[in-house]
Length: 345
Image 1 (cartoon, rainbow, N blue to C red):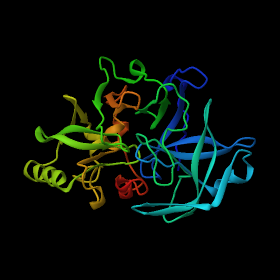
Image 2 (image 1 turned 180 degrees about the vertical axis):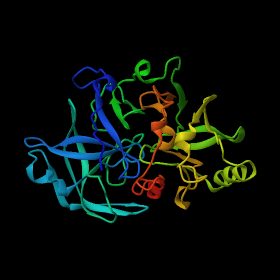
Image 3 (image 1 turned 135 degrees about the vertical axis):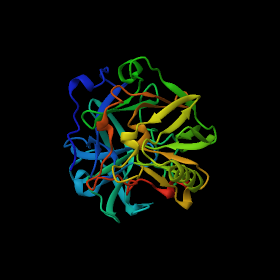
């Protein structure tokens, strides 16, 4: 099941045509465990519709060969001699490397990408992945953002609480349109040594108890839960055991500003279960992997030009429909994208 990805016009960013700014709508997909999915066009001559994940935690871009784009696109170039394989927690994808044109609404760019021929997991709705990591290239020279011709390397996400859909904007910041009335963006400077990740220091409180004031956090649109070190997770569970969970409050402290995750989003709806996970051993070195449990509540800005991340409470952020449910009533860590192999790149 894919929710309709097109927002009502009143929710869509008003942006100029051309190469400076573009906007594309995305949906929060149940069937892909909370991935941000959007519809793109791949190729020239005959374009192929592709449903792809917008992933700030990956550099690579890949497209499923079963979409047929390699057979009809006039601009596709690829070779079986350059193989591709990426391992995720649930399995791996493999194929070969190539290049093609990708279009999002009015904006088109040429992208080095992988053509995936084999999936080692149930892919659900996913037909592709667009890597939006902070920058740099992986070992196969698949690069995030490098091919974009935007004057300003900045992009942002707004998630609409009433439609379960959102808008992804590249090239500019729309603070007045997407920040809740009376709020402004609060920025975090990125860690200078984090070439790959959108990574910064934050504080965290649970039920008014400070759990850390300088936690190493990675912000990842490809992750559903708020995933943390075993130590932080155990601290939260100990507080719940002592006090109960009738009204738990989890807050990230961003440059001194307290940004709370609403209870309606934090709780799964199954007993006292919260959307919290424990980092895999391969993720040692990070304290937090901040996914949709946090991000859907805020207009989130990823600014490569000024090396920063910005957040403000999103318009409509009090709506209970921001709750993130899977088919069984309880969200789980994204099967595909909580990728411990990223830590090795």
